Structures are given as structure tokens and as C-alpha cells.
Image (cartoon, rainbow, N blue to C red; front, side):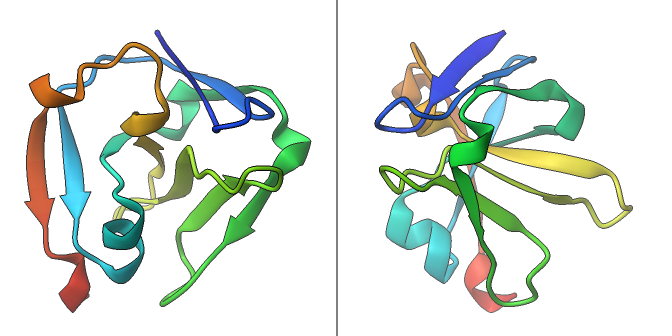
Length: 114
């Protein structure tokens, strides 16, 4: 189980699972924010504190809910659905505690052309 938070700590959460690889997307949103995203089933994510401090940003097709902290603006995760309809969470691993970012396999995704 991994734990994470936004920058100010108002939003805290846990994620069940092991990070095998992350997605590094070059879309206009992910590239600007430097996200490294770990996709897990929505049920693996549990907000433990500050759910009332989250607000959502959507763009393009408005199908991904980019949740961020109203206090500090940090985006620890996003929520959406896979093409088959399965609910998923995209965890920003940069917001997780005790993660060796250099040791994680990165998959480049060309989100710019979607």
C-alpha cells in the first residue's frame, strides 16, 4: 500500500498495488505539469482526508476528471474510464511518499495527437 498527498497535505490518500511502470504523456496538460501516471482500478484508490478540498478540471473530451487540491493546486490523481468502461484512477506518482522515481520504467505516450 502506498500513501500520498497534495503539496500542502490537505488531501491524503492511499493506493493499493505495486508500481510496475508509469505513463509519461506529452499531451498539453501532462507535459506542462510533468506527470508520471500509474493507472490502477478506481477501487484501489482511497481518499483518507480532504475529499472536500478537491475540485475538478476537465478539458478536450471532458472524460477525465483531473482532481486537484483547492488549497495548493497540486493534482495527486485523476479519475476516468478505460475504453471498455472500467473505472480507473491515474495516480501522479510524484505525489506518493517514498517512491524512487529513477527506478520506475516509463512508457512514453503520444497524447498530443489524441
